Amino acid sequence: MELFGKFMQQFLHDASCFLHETANILPLLVEDNIIQISCEFDITHFNSLLLVNLPTALQMMINNAAKKRQAEFIAGRYCVVRALMTLTNLDNYWVSNRSDRSPLWPEGIVGSISHSKTIATAIVARQSYARSVGVDIEAIIPDQQARQLASIILAGSTLTTNEYSFSQFVTLIFSAKETLFKAIYPLLGKMMDFDDVICTLVDSQRCICRLILQKGRYYSDIKQREFDIAYAFNETSVMTRLLIPTMPQWNNLTLNTKRK
Image 1: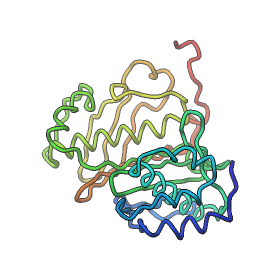
Image 2: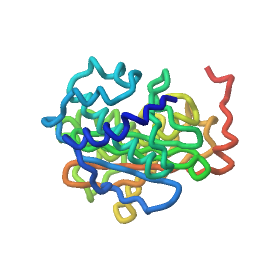
Image 3: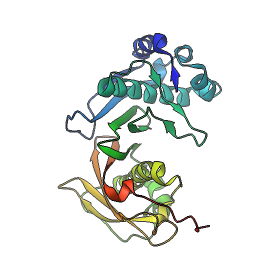
């Protein structure tokens, strides 16, 4: 935990030179236990001097990164700061990273961060309300690239849809899987691959993408095998989100320690 409250307000103020808060592509019902903040940013207005408002540990993570990566990082951390302040009134907590690069959230809080070319978002929830959360935002993959990546992303699924273009469909599945992986990783401490889950349903009326855990490496580790990922499109992107409620099958999650 790093406490640098004296820089936080300055950070929020200075970041406004290249970003502004915007409504979530995927609306979230306003509740006391969960908050999502999104912003749009313009890299052409980004200045690397913004990094000086970050604590040293965070500066070291991105000092040598490309300008694009720095802008995405700052935009994501802006959303994190605003979300934590809104949910918990914490105005002095900087979310750093663990050794595996996953975010280190305050005690009693779970969260997730994502960014695309011009949008960043962060969601945080009280652990008493959610065991874990995942969020992802992706720019729509160009059609040619989507066709090249489809076999990897769809991982054997024969599901098709007439509701969306092929590139939208592939991007949706990719984003939904990323969201699921982000939500499950804090619980398992293990990375998942695209072929560990398969999409069996895209419901455009309810805006739900259903993912099913395949038999394999993690099948015996997770009691919940079916996940409905919420999604929404705008003109250029798709956002997906998953909340895993606090309930017995996750609180009592045990890993198969014999698995190699």
